[in-house]
Image (tube, rainbow, N blue to C red; front, side, top):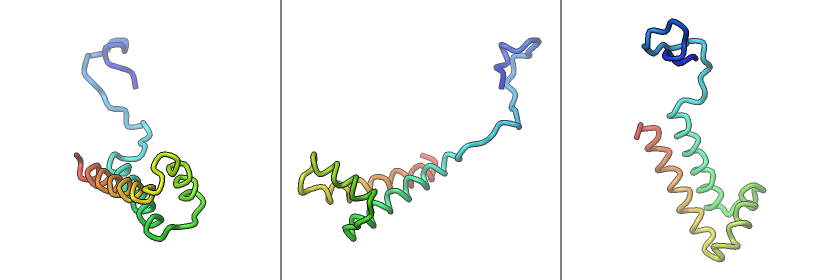
Length: 90
């Protein structure tokens, strides 16, 4: 899309190009964040052996030590809350 002030013979008013491809809608990222939060909360609650979760735990254990599972519970809750706020439009 060309900015109106740079377009030859432009009127200075903004125009919308309907041919632009849309990416994930803003609320869509909220749903993604909530899904990640639920994933971490589920894996944390069951102490899952899922490879991705175990890699995250192993890396976080260096910093958090024995509190790594509490950290992931708080992280999951934060993702769920922030994702819900994003979906709600805040």
